[in-house]
Image 1: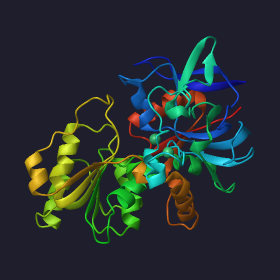
Image 2: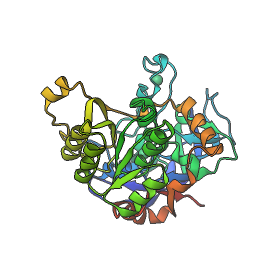
Image 3: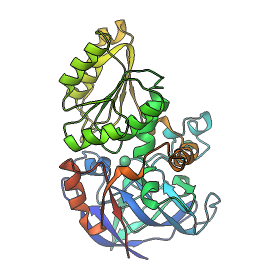
Length: 369
Ligand SMILES: [Zn+2]
Ligand SMILES: [Zn+2]
């Protein structure tokens, strides 16, 4: 069948919206009609990637309706509403079977092929990969059933699309990775789609002082709505405040969610953290091979600090997506507020321009026929 999708033709090129051919789902796969897709920074990082395969259909955040299932699919049925989790759960690999589904061996690589190495998107003789083997910037996509998490039909698709990536990633960084405790002093670098959820997670876990650093005024204002107790435009003034309020002890937890995470940010985060405290790194540099962690190892040792990477906030898509949606429905998690703008597929470039200009917490594409 035919579909329309926003694609990157090659490294350094901008998004183009093109018509593509889409294969039917094969064994273990489903055909998804994508209703809403999130404009995450990770897709934009692809543009500058030095190891991705092109051409590629963008989009790894999304929600939609299952239209067809391939042989052997038992998790979902046609008509089901699903979140496409960018983390699959095979249920059988070493990581899934030991409770670390976020490390599932079926997790995507930068080739964007399906599990068997083949592609479902084509244009003439050219195969198109899909971001994280999903490709939600396409109206229709064929994805693994292991990436589908069924949801209640009462959940709006926009809200559901946030559960693909940014909500579990941010919320989980505070709750599951850093294990924020009541009264903790927590600092969050960046208040975009991931950062604002780290703030919500820390707030619901009982953080005492909750400081957010973001250069954009609108995002600092938003951070206060999501539970921050103080906001700063730069790390220097935040560090001064933390030093004063903790009498030189430092923050218990620092979560780094900036759009582009570089050595300077990580070093500031490390310096703000107290002895025995935890720095959680989320987010990426444009070039995945860039060395961004340059820290005084002796201090890391003698101060027993922890610097940990975190994928998907150590969440389990199958249990945490329903949990987070329940919290939303009970009024304990703000999700509607996170969607700051809606775009049509043809306006994908504008959506990312607005993200770079700091206008959006999370912009989403609302697909139409
Ligand atoms: Zn994302
Ligand atoms: Zn697995």
